[in-house]
Each structure stands twice: as structure tokens, then as C-alpha cells.
Length: 255
Length: 255
Image 1: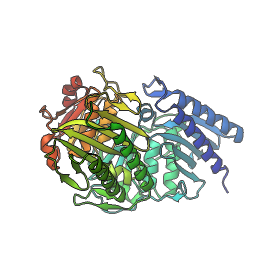
Image 2: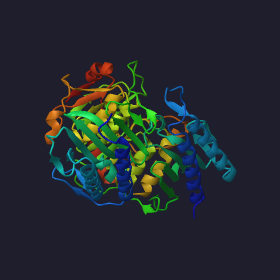
Image 3: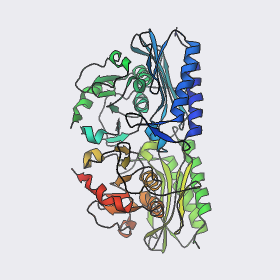
Image 4: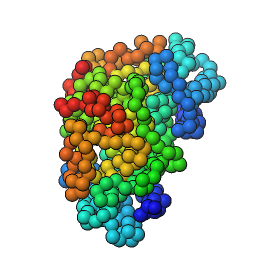
């Protein structure tokens, strides 16, 4: 029995997506302190989600990309990225989405990632299966890699890493989307370099329920708890089917 | 005075896009001889466009990705990629589109690129301005490159090139989309490695009308005429504002 109503969280994500679509190709972008982009859409969606969550789950903590960290000592902590992929959003690119993750005791518990231009809603709740809309998800099983197989990477990969994956390499612009495309077995895996907890929480919940796993580039297991203060991943992580991660690690090296 | 009715070509592109959307996430993929993907959507759209063109412009030549090269000695030659970005299409990714280019005497004359999931229709006709829907396009003028500026590259770039661009690098999965995002000033430039004429013809017409240009990685000017037999680009090309191309060339080297 889940502690939350995932159908309602999906509705919040869709409502947020409608709000974002209204601003798409029609919004001024501004710089944050780290020089990344923020828009009125990011700000309004995070505010909307915080209000919905606070009203429905007053005992839960919330952290979000725009308003930061608060009450993360609670058992349940919501991790919000109102628009994951703001860089794509302000560039008129289609792959960005609303990412709503929920941790319980520092571990992924539930998550929704909604990609408005695709109208794809990825969701998982409390140990249940993961879905894209009504379709159950499963990561790609191990097997020979073809030249059309692909992995997702970040958009600074050319600067930070040497990649020798024998198939294609795509930079999608959204960590949440990276996790979803791995979870549905479309991408063979992904290399995630610079993410924070609000980028990862929902996607990793969906990934795990689809049979996927994450590991540090060094081989160290991923521990999300230290990220609750809003810091970046201490090292890049790789995601995919657990049996393919050692091979994937072999295809990625730091420059 | 244009030799064609560009509004009608835009309608063909939208009609094709509707057809493709019906197959999206709902079609079997098959391998071509070069191991790339093809679907029923690619085949039906090329057939539809060939029929429309042959009925309306019987004296024109047509070449297309699926049915190949025919009558390319004519003054006007249509270059069709029914779905540019079939790899993205079969992966459930959003960035793929219908590319309809028209050459006159071997040079870009007109073009339409329609990206169905964005409902973005890029078009140019016979020396007129280029548009995205109703918005005129202009490439980004030269200026300092910020860490959030980005270039588009192909999905085998990690294997073929070393990129030192100081901003972001994205692999969008569609050469036609690459051209459009450069033409609208969203991308700073693009590196196009493996394209054929049907990938390029519409996008380069749009790019040129937006003030952009293309050059070979060696610095050699781009000549499309040899590609009329269906061969690949003899070397990668760079696209962007003409005054930024020398700098962009400095950021790309072969491995």
C-alpha cells in the first residue's frame, strides 16, 4: 500500500506540463548564479508543485531546483525539477520535462517524469512496476551492441570524457529523460555527469522499477543521501541493466 | 516569382507529419542494407510525396532516401527524406521530421522541414526569407561563446571527431533539424558528418536564407552537385554564420 496517490501526482505533472507549454517559445530566459537558464515557467511550476504537496502531504520535506532545500530531514522528501532540461526549453528543443521524485529515508520511493511535447508520462509508485503512460517498462537486457544502439550523455561530455561506445551517442538535454529512455529499453544506457538530486530522484525510481541500476564511474555504489543538501553528484554515474554496467564503465574515461 | 507553390509543399509536409505521428511508438522497424532503420512510415511518406510532386511538377526530377535517385539531370530536382531522424523515430525520441528540398541546377532553391511533435514548419521559397511557422529566421551573429551556447553534432561524433567547442554539444539525431536550429539562431553552429543530399537539401536552403553558410572541414566550399547520385558528403561540413565558420573549424578535428 503506497503512502501517496500517484495518480494525483501524475495530474500535477500534466498540469505543470500545460503551464510549461504555454511558455514554450514564448518566454524570456534569465541567468542564475551558475549561469544556467531559468524562466518564469520554472519558477511558477515549482511554486505550483510545492503548494500542491504542502497541502496534501504537510509532513513531507521538499527540495527543488529553483527554491532549494528545506526540511530534508523528514522521512519523505519530494525532489522537484520543474523543468528538467531548461536549456533545451529555451532553445526551442522538444526534450524537457517535469520531474517529481519522492525519497523515503533517502531512497527513491516514487516518481513521475512528464515530457509534454511527447505527452509521455513515466511513473512508478512504491515498489510497483514502472510505466510510460499505460505501457510497462523494462531496461534492455544484456546482448551484443549494434551500431544503431545508443547511449545518452550530458552536453559537456565532449569536454569531460572520452567515450568509446560502439553505437550512437546522443545528448538529450535532460537527465530525467535519460533515465526514462534507459528505463524503457530504448537507450542501452546513459552517462550522467553533473546532476543534482532533483534531476535524478524521479528518474532513478522509474529506472529501478524497470530493472535498471546505477553505479559510479569508479565502480562505487550510488548513495543519494549526501545529495540531500543540494550538492552535485560527487562523480559521474552510469545507468542501465545491472549486467551491462561494467562494460559501459569500460567505454567511459575522464579526459 | 517562384516556380513552385511553397504553401502547397508545406501542406504536403504536414500531411506527411500526420501520417508519421500515427505510426510513432506504433511501428515495426526493419534494417536496410546499411543497417540503418526504416519503417512503414518512411516508405508511405516518400510514396505520398513522390505522387504529389509527379502530379504537380511532372517535368521535375526526384530523389529520395527510400526509393533512391531518378531523373536528376532535370533543372529542378526534389530531394526527399520522408523521416529524417528515423533512428530517433524508432527510439521514441521527439526530434525527427519530414524534409522536402528542391534544387535548381544543383543549388538549393526551396525547402520545407516539418517537425511534427513540435508542430514547427520551417520553410523557404526561391530567394525569399526563411520562416519557422510565421517567424522569420536569422542565424546567430558572431560574438563571444558562453557555456550555455551549443552546437549540434552527429551521433557518431564521439568516434570520429575531437570537439573542443567551449559550450554545449548536442546530438539531435536529424540533419534537417540541425540546419533549422542553426537557421533560427538557437544553435551556434553544427557539424554534419555523414549526410546525403536528401538530408541536406531543404535544411541548407533554409539556412542560406537565414544568413547561414556551410563549409567543408578542410575549408573547401560545399558543392552539392556531386551528391546528386546519392553518395555521402565527401567530408564533414560545418554550418553557421559565415563569419563564425573559421573559428568553428578550429574546434573540430578528426580522430
